Length: 541
Image (tube, rainbow, N blue to C red):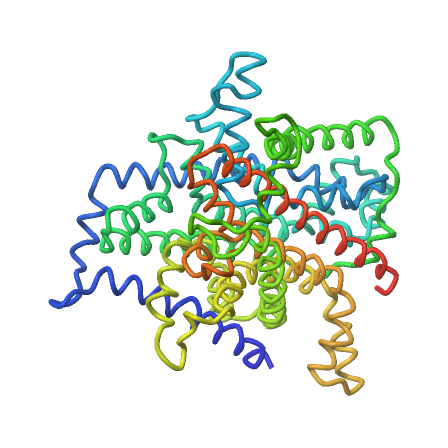
């Protein structure tokens, strides 16, 4: 049964991830004279490369720690508190995660750079500093922690913690000894995803870091697209593989013995109105941090989309409906909305099927093969999107995998990034299901598939909807690989925004801000609808 569940995800990653990446690495390290393994020592011995490796590692660790510190209180508030506007807030905190990095970097530059809000109010500039990079990474990854940890936190039975309080434990001691161990796998999964995203950071570093900061992702892009040095880029890609593999091994080692069966309940029964000054202060603090760190940069984008030379208005939005005469677009930029939604729906469906089967296969802990399979599913988050995009172009170009002219190529690339989120969202909940329920169903004659359908699926329906929202949101904002494979007549929203930002002129910049605002609105509405569907069906658990 486990092998059957693993077959589809394994085949998907073998064909659409391992094969393209191996093709681009082979193109860089193999010449007519054979494999050039000497390039490994030459590249890794360069002082500038070693400096890039060190900066990539420590900024990823610092970003992960800061994100957990700021976002975990938000996860608690959204999981345990009931207050007006909660569904809207849950959707809003996810919007930054889907923004193209070039857009969000520009928004933070307007806040932290020359002439920005801090510069105007207090004469403080944070651009070209590591603090701007760290804050922007928190902006992007806040939703990862809130949705991954909060999804499980909302289903933990609070009576277990209350029982510890009755036995004399303080509120903090009960949380530390009862709730925190139960949340351990979800917290570790969120930390892992945040680390992988910040480890491969590209757009944020380019815009906010200045020439003094560069990550592996930035250097791979420079060596590939600007210097055409494929051997150096291939070596750096292998370094990324090794680093990500080491991180995944540590993650598996630390989490494997901390997972246990938990009592999961209807999330509607665990949320209540804040009580006492402490809980109201916590809610106020979370709302203030969301407003300053998440909403303020988004507000800058909206303000710039309305700030036209003739005063505030919708001139930039009207320009999006016109056919471009410069050759940048073959269709009006606003058509990218339908393209993005269409691609995101297909990519989310692929990610749910592949990721759902993978999570079901990983539910029952086993040996090294299964743990290696678990690590394989996370690799797309730690591999350069530039490498994947180029790999698609040079590998999927011959029958029976000649997909260069097919629209399905974009959803396939987007699904690669969505699958890890589906797995990491569903796996902690699946493993928390009491195994005795499955055993009882099996004793009564249920087949493994029926056990999966009638025992596991009803309990993880909420996690499944969270995973669907994540996969859809990730697909909407995916840029790194899509920019290489999206057809000129079918651009996605992030690709269209990047094309507009690359052109000079106030009009195109305003159009880019307007299209970015449209992207935010599409994401917010989609996530809000998903929240409503999930809430309406909460009574079915």
